[in-house]
Length: 163
Image 1 (cartoon, one colour):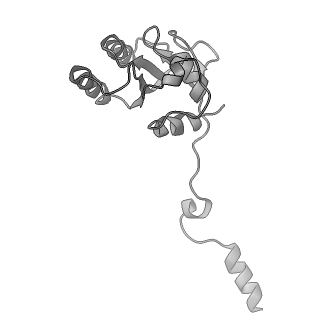
Image 2 (cartoon, one colour; image 1 turned 30 degrees about the horizontal axis):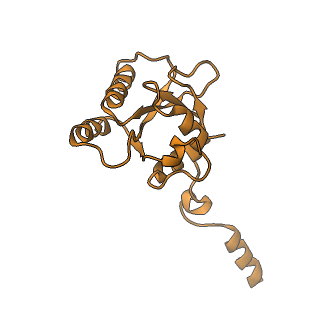
């Protein structure tokens, strides 16, 4: 009789539901890369991280509604990123789109000059920003291999999305 009580106690789990079932992964989310200027790196990012390549256009009907704005880290790129953010802030985008983050792709190896770093800080104060470092292999067209070091947070964001 004692074994029946033990089996019954083992089958009834105690504690909050999260303890019992564990963390629940967010439902798969599709996303679209949207370039804020030509040469931002949208096609490369879509090839490496997955997702929908929208080029410089807003995602169309049937495309994902979660948007990752993409820009380079040069002065023109950061200005274009700020303009893209303004479109979202003022509602000047197609209805139903959600801005997830801004992805800034390095325009050159090394650290950003101070004026550009200040502009980047301004962008970071308004939205989540993911940075992608300079990848020499990408310049040569080699998109194989793993995503670059330092982009783990971007990998988590994009891998949480549905294929």
